[in-house]
Length: 117
Image (cartoon, rainbow, N blue to C red; front, side, top):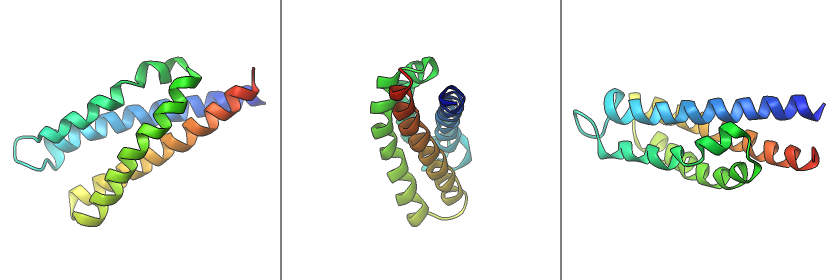
């Protein structure tokens, strides 16, 4: 039973992290950049690329530290959803959902993978 749950959590965290990476890219380059033509805020995607290989491989340690990293993106989403309007607010709400999804799936994956050993 643990194996099915850990596989589902692994899939959920992988998908939400990849979706968050793409969201940050298209948000700051095309959909609603701070400046026309793109924003330097697109570089916020770089920290998300660091845990990607470990997440895709199911490395427990990566799940542990990346669950703390993702809280920065959750915080940014909350700040921007409350301070912006229109498309930026919608994208910020999506960022909140993806970051929260990653956080919970990563935390529970790390917890279940510890008991599966």
